[in-house]
Image (cartoon, rainbow, N blue to C red):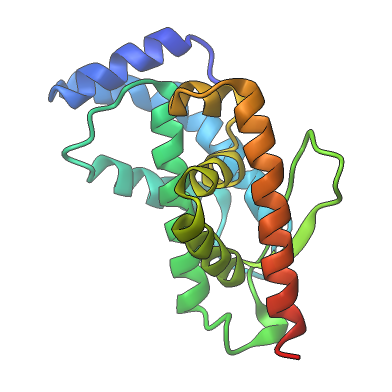
Length: 193
Protein backbone atom coordinates (compact mmCIF):
# COMPACT_ATOMS: atom_id res chain seq x y z
CA UNK A 1 0.00 0.00 0.00
CA UNK A 2 1.04 3.59 -0.52
CA UNK A 3 2.40 5.14 2.63
CA UNK A 4 1.48 8.67 3.54
CA UNK A 5 -2.18 8.52 2.49
CA UNK A 6 -2.73 12.04 3.81
CA UNK A 7 0.14 13.33 1.67
CA UNK A 8 -1.29 11.56 -1.38
CA UNK A 9 -4.73 13.03 -0.70
CA UNK A 10 -3.31 16.55 -0.36
CA UNK A 11 -1.32 16.20 -3.59
CA UNK A 12 -4.44 14.96 -5.37
CA UNK A 13 -6.46 17.95 -4.19
CA UNK A 14 -3.67 20.31 -5.29
CA UNK A 15 -3.49 18.55 -8.66
CA UNK A 16 -7.26 19.05 -9.00
CA UNK A 17 -6.75 22.77 -8.53
CA UNK A 18 -4.31 22.78 -11.46
CA UNK A 19 -1.02 22.44 -9.60
CA UNK A 20 1.14 20.55 -12.14
CA UNK A 21 4.00 20.19 -9.64
CA UNK A 22 1.66 18.32 -7.29
CA UNK A 23 0.83 15.94 -10.15
CA UNK A 24 4.52 15.32 -10.75
CA UNK A 25 5.14 14.69 -7.04
CA UNK A 26 2.16 12.33 -6.93
CA UNK A 27 3.44 9.93 -9.60
CA UNK A 28 6.19 8.24 -7.57
CA UNK A 29 3.86 7.91 -4.57
CA UNK A 30 1.17 5.98 -6.44
CA UNK A 31 3.12 4.33 -9.28
CA UNK A 32 4.46 1.35 -7.32
CA UNK A 33 1.03 0.61 -5.86
CA UNK A 34 -0.65 0.85 -9.27
CA UNK A 35 1.96 -1.46 -10.78
CA UNK A 36 1.54 -4.00 -7.97
CA UNK A 37 -2.23 -4.00 -8.50
CA UNK A 38 -1.82 -4.36 -12.28
CA UNK A 39 0.57 -7.30 -11.84
CA UNK A 40 -1.98 -9.04 -9.63
CA UNK A 41 -4.69 -8.72 -12.32
CA UNK A 42 -2.44 -10.05 -15.04
CA UNK A 43 -1.27 -13.17 -13.17
CA UNK A 44 -4.19 -15.26 -14.40
CA UNK A 45 -3.84 -14.32 -18.07
CA UNK A 46 -2.65 -16.52 -20.88
CA UNK A 47 1.12 -16.82 -20.88
CA UNK A 48 1.80 -15.41 -24.35
CA UNK A 49 -0.22 -12.20 -24.11
CA UNK A 50 1.52 -8.92 -24.85
CA UNK A 51 -0.01 -6.72 -22.16
CA UNK A 52 2.38 -6.29 -19.24
CA UNK A 53 1.74 -4.63 -15.84
CA UNK A 54 3.87 -1.63 -16.79
CA UNK A 55 1.88 -1.10 -19.98
CA UNK A 56 -1.41 -1.43 -18.10
CA UNK A 57 -0.31 1.14 -15.52
CA UNK A 58 1.02 3.55 -18.13
CA UNK A 59 -2.14 3.38 -20.23
CA UNK A 60 -4.35 3.78 -17.16
CA UNK A 61 -2.23 6.69 -15.93
CA UNK A 62 -2.42 8.42 -19.30
CA UNK A 63 -6.19 8.14 -19.09
CA UNK A 64 -6.15 9.41 -15.50
CA UNK A 65 -4.10 12.44 -16.53
CA UNK A 66 -6.71 13.15 -19.20
CA UNK A 67 -9.39 13.55 -16.52
CA UNK A 68 -9.51 17.35 -16.52
CA UNK A 69 -12.52 17.86 -14.36
CA UNK A 70 -11.97 15.38 -11.55
CA UNK A 71 -12.04 16.96 -8.12
CA UNK A 72 -9.90 14.37 -6.37
CA UNK A 73 -11.20 13.83 -2.86
CA UNK A 74 -8.64 11.44 -1.43
CA UNK A 75 -6.44 8.42 -2.11
CA UNK A 76 -9.43 6.04 -2.18
CA UNK A 77 -11.20 8.17 -4.77
CA UNK A 78 -8.05 8.21 -6.92
CA UNK A 79 -7.67 4.43 -6.79
CA UNK A 80 -11.39 4.02 -7.50
CA UNK A 81 -11.03 6.04 -10.69
CA UNK A 82 -7.77 4.20 -11.45
CA UNK A 83 -9.77 0.95 -11.14
CA UNK A 84 -12.21 2.20 -13.77
CA UNK A 85 -9.34 3.12 -16.07
CA UNK A 86 -7.64 -0.27 -15.66
CA UNK A 87 -10.94 -1.98 -16.37
CA UNK A 88 -11.34 0.04 -19.57
CA UNK A 89 -7.78 -0.72 -20.66
CA UNK A 90 -8.26 -4.46 -20.07
CA UNK A 91 -11.59 -4.48 -21.91
CA UNK A 92 -10.19 -2.47 -24.82
CA UNK A 93 -7.22 -4.82 -24.99
CA UNK A 94 -9.49 -7.88 -25.00
CA UNK A 95 -11.66 -6.39 -27.74
CA UNK A 96 -8.66 -5.43 -29.86
CA UNK A 97 -7.28 -8.93 -29.65
CA UNK A 98 -10.54 -10.59 -30.61
CA UNK A 99 -11.06 -12.39 -27.33
CA UNK A 100 -14.73 -12.83 -28.04
CA UNK A 101 -13.98 -14.65 -31.31
CA UNK A 102 -10.96 -16.76 -30.35
CA UNK A 103 -12.00 -18.76 -27.32
CA UNK A 104 -8.60 -20.46 -27.03
CA UNK A 105 -6.64 -17.22 -26.75
CA UNK A 106 -8.75 -15.16 -24.39
CA UNK A 107 -7.50 -12.70 -21.85
CA UNK A 108 -8.48 -14.27 -18.54
CA UNK A 109 -8.99 -12.71 -15.14
CA UNK A 110 -9.94 -14.04 -11.74
CA UNK A 111 -12.75 -12.48 -9.74
CA UNK A 112 -10.97 -12.88 -6.45
CA UNK A 113 -11.87 -12.02 -2.90
CA UNK A 114 -8.53 -12.21 -1.20
CA UNK A 115 -10.18 -12.24 2.20
CA UNK A 116 -13.38 -14.08 1.31
CA UNK A 117 -14.27 -17.69 1.86
CA UNK A 118 -15.49 -18.45 -1.67
CA UNK A 119 -13.10 -19.82 -4.30
CA UNK A 120 -12.12 -17.43 -7.11
CA UNK A 121 -14.08 -17.41 -10.33
CA UNK A 122 -12.02 -17.71 -13.52
CA UNK A 123 -13.69 -15.77 -16.33
CA UNK A 124 -13.16 -13.86 -19.53
CA UNK A 125 -12.61 -10.14 -19.07
CA UNK A 126 -15.35 -9.26 -21.58
CA UNK A 127 -17.84 -11.45 -19.73
CA UNK A 128 -16.82 -9.80 -16.47
CA UNK A 129 -17.25 -6.37 -18.05
CA UNK A 130 -20.76 -7.21 -19.32
CA UNK A 131 -21.78 -8.65 -15.95
CA UNK A 132 -20.44 -5.57 -14.17
CA UNK A 133 -22.40 -3.32 -16.55
CA UNK A 134 -25.55 -5.34 -15.78
CA UNK A 135 -24.89 -5.08 -12.06
CA UNK A 136 -24.47 -1.31 -12.41
CA UNK A 137 -27.99 -1.11 -13.85
CA UNK A 138 -29.36 -3.17 -10.93
CA UNK A 139 -27.22 -1.75 -8.12
CA UNK A 140 -24.72 0.99 -8.99
CA UNK A 141 -23.20 1.00 -5.49
CA UNK A 142 -22.43 -2.72 -5.62
CA UNK A 143 -20.90 -2.29 -9.08
CA UNK A 144 -18.67 0.49 -7.74
CA UNK A 145 -17.59 -1.75 -4.87
CA UNK A 146 -16.73 -4.60 -7.24
CA UNK A 147 -14.81 -2.26 -9.52
CA UNK A 148 -12.84 -0.73 -6.64
CA UNK A 149 -12.14 -4.06 -4.96
CA UNK A 150 -11.32 -6.04 -8.09
CA UNK A 151 -9.83 -3.56 -10.54
CA UNK A 152 -8.57 -1.06 -7.98
CA UNK A 153 -7.41 -3.59 -5.42
CA UNK A 154 -8.78 -1.41 -2.64
CA UNK A 155 -9.41 -2.95 0.76
CA UNK A 156 -12.88 -2.91 2.28
CA UNK A 157 -11.76 -0.06 4.52
CA UNK A 158 -10.47 1.99 1.56
CA UNK A 159 -13.72 1.42 -0.36
CA UNK A 160 -15.70 2.43 2.73
CA UNK A 161 -13.78 5.70 2.96
CA UNK A 162 -14.06 6.38 -0.78
CA UNK A 163 -17.83 5.75 -0.83
CA UNK A 164 -18.56 7.15 2.64
CA UNK A 165 -19.97 3.82 3.88
CA UNK A 166 -19.29 1.66 6.89
CA UNK A 167 -16.82 -1.18 6.46
CA UNK A 168 -19.57 -3.66 7.41
CA UNK A 169 -21.79 -2.32 4.61
CA UNK A 170 -18.98 -2.64 2.10
CA UNK A 171 -18.25 -6.23 3.25
CA UNK A 172 -21.93 -7.20 2.96
CA UNK A 173 -22.40 -5.50 -0.42
CA UNK A 174 -19.14 -7.03 -1.75
CA UNK A 175 -20.29 -10.55 -0.85
CA UNK A 176 -23.75 -9.95 -2.32
CA UNK A 177 -22.31 -8.49 -5.52
CA UNK A 178 -19.85 -11.36 -5.94
CA UNK A 179 -22.66 -13.89 -5.53
CA UNK A 180 -24.82 -12.02 -8.07
CA UNK A 181 -21.96 -11.84 -10.57
CA UNK A 182 -21.07 -15.50 -10.06
CA UNK A 183 -24.66 -16.53 -10.84
CA UNK A 184 -24.87 -14.16 -13.84
CA UNK A 185 -21.57 -15.26 -15.32
CA UNK A 186 -22.22 -18.95 -14.64
CA UNK A 187 -25.57 -18.75 -16.43
CA UNK A 188 -23.95 -16.95 -19.38
CA UNK A 189 -21.18 -19.52 -19.56
CA UNK A 190 -23.71 -22.39 -19.53
CA UNK A 191 -25.64 -20.73 -22.38
CA UNK A 192 -29.37 -20.73 -22.97
CA UNK A 193 -31.28 -23.74 -21.67
